[in-house]
Length: 145
Image 1: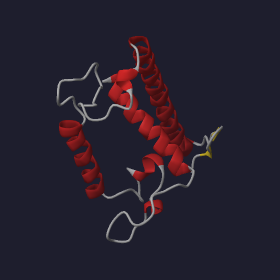
Image 2 (image 1 turned 120 degrees about the vertical axis):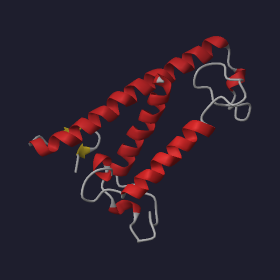
Image 3 (image 1 turned 45 degrees about the horizontal axis):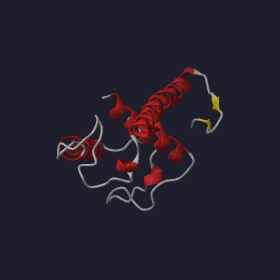
């Protein structure tokens, strides 16, 4: 479970940093003509006056559920460790590493996931304390707006 949460936190942290830097997908997110950059960043995109609609969030939850139940699992039983979802399809040279290198790379992924969990938690906390009167100036992304 920690590996899965770490991977999700890495995606969440990177997505938060990228969108706050002003990088958004081109085009519209729905048929009403709302562009991707018309929605706020961070938690405000999920709850708030300008948030994504409930049906949009439902689609996101359904897609994640589909991935969880049918895609992101060890289908063939060939996984060497928890979180190994290669399923005999994509290797990227993993089988060429010796056991010590494999263990080291798994430890690096676990530590990066732990750091990302703390990072996204910190961003969420900073975003929620602004209404309390504290506006932090973060080193990389500046003020959260």
